[in-house]
Image (tube, rainbow, N blue to C red; front, side, top):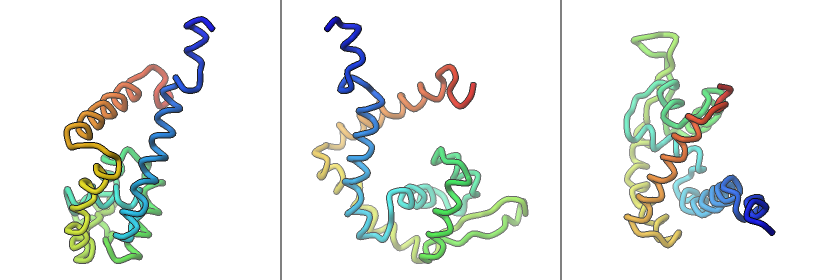
Length: 152
């Protein structure tokens, strides 16, 4: 096979490696987050709220790079679980504010162990995890700016 043909080998495809890595990493998180009563997408919402609360749905959506329609069911489930409350914004009644409950704030203390546990489960030290994260963020930015990204 010539080198151009090698470029089409499945094992050389960036999209394949990212897809498999994503499933594997999220799968490794599953038992750790299950102990907190969270799914991986719910954990991401809680991370955004632990950084800043209250936040508008629009702000959370932007932070997580999720469409509001995708975020809404996550917020409803977290609200039903008693971790957050949603209410109309005082500043703009068209906006919906999301705030942590006492239960949601208390869960933060348990979640502090998640990053270290995950580095251990994935066999990474802090420097390796930070380097990998940096590479992924660069890739996300490059993909977002690529021609034809998001219909451009």
